[in-house]
Length: 200
Image (tube, rainbow, N blue to C red; front, side, top):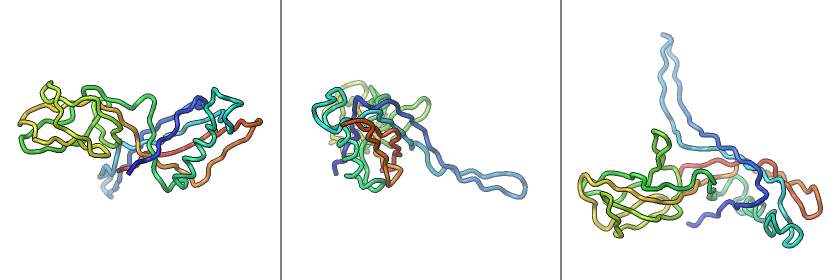
């Protein structure tokens, strides 16, 4: 399945990114609490477009029919129903990332990326530049969407598997309605477009 991609446009003015976690808290009569982590590694995004062009000629710096690019994606997804890929301009690639350690039998490994001291695997790999085993580049691998590295033969036990790759977040719009403001001839704005990453 090929997912549509959220457009990159000159009229975008800001973006916010909020990490989301969920914890189940059970309180007892003794005053103690039991906490269970339900999930982590998801994000809510909000982007703003101060100017979108509805034609192909009057405002070429904004991109031809940039309004239709944003509105068309929203309609294609059916609001909050369908999924799309969002490439975060500040969080979209990993270089020489340690993926796993071979055990001599396993041939498939989930791509992960480091975030500080943590690891995350909730993303969609859009391209792989290189894969290495114990620092030596190898070619006996393939990418299985959305984020699985598959070898034709298992790496040796104890071997360090690294990769350089690009990724995006699988997202859904938060609302089933979206405001677009026509503030000037052929110029529109979408001042708050909200969406959230999802589990794959």
